[in-house]
Length: 297
Ligand code: SAM
Image (cartoon, rainbow, N blue to C red):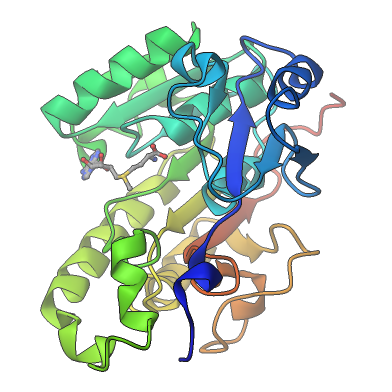
């Protein structure tokens, strides 16, 4: 692929923490230094020019805004929890998506944020506190050990599943293989066994999510470009999903890039492209109808 480094320059995305600041106010502040546009798909997501260095900006330090990419900000919106819902964020640290969910709940309802790794759990707890999210209960433990029949989870309506993955779609370093100076074939370096192990885990957590009795929406997301962690994982659980009453739905229908055409229904899946969108991300949305009476919000 003939690219130079400027092709990989990302616009700087900033997600407004609406728990702390109004989006218009954040725009006004940031416009003092930068040109600011609003994203047309993700509410409260702002687009700043590439190279805008916001790391020491007071809005970032005070957690009024987060440096969060567009693709990663699409996951919580795809899940679409409504204020008042109980939600599980199954693999949650450092909490970017947990805090996005908290903003979407507008302080009404609860999020159970599960994280296995102790250090990352501590970071999650700090981030939740600093962000002003009062309705997040962080749990240090394995999502696979949450008992779906425990009454504490009987009202959970949505699960966000953003499990450990290869991360092949994100880090700029890992995109270096796309630059002309690197002649070796990236595929030569992919550790297939590692991907298989990750996919095995991803399949397990997804299957576990289906067993929560009141859940009606599940988002499975990765920042991987590999079919084995994306379409293949989804395809492998379709039968079980349907036995629990779930089907795939299209998130962000206006988005042109869909799943690789590896099975019937993969057009419901969403991909972002590592070159075109500067980040490789994947979203699958499972929906089950008829669990709850329709409610007008
Ligand atoms: N959703 C997070 C965010 O947006 O900030 C990123 C999550 S990261 C891709 C995956 C996380 O899942 C890691 O922090 C990892 O330690 C955690 N994890 C891995 N296995 C887990 C398990 N069985 N139960 C709970 N968390 C797990």
